[in-house]
Image 1: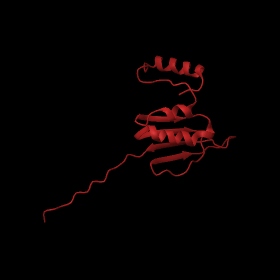
Image 2: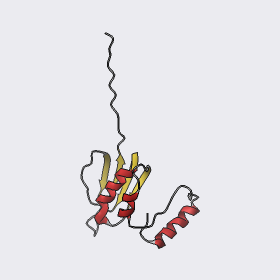
Image 3: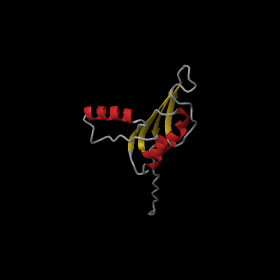
Image 4: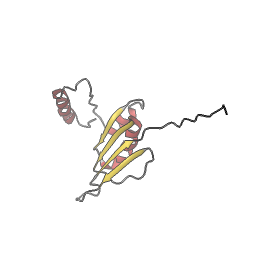
Length: 122
């Protein structure tokens, strides 16, 4: 997803050169609008979040909706977001000029279904 056509063109050239044209699609437009328009039955393996930092929480919420169970999120230059029981996550903070240097790496927890089996013959 790119907000500027110029960057989308460069990304498409790189995808084509890598031989991944049939596996990747570039979407041009504001990420917050575009993400919310993607149907939640989409199944992404990875979400790489590197956009306007003020919207990182919203991007993370949208990515959680779209990334399959067991899939990963990587959020570049983020602040600590908080605790989310549906993910396993770690953050690494770095020292720098910005107030949000560092990154978040998270995995969407698989949903384990509890199966109960009752013994009826005693």
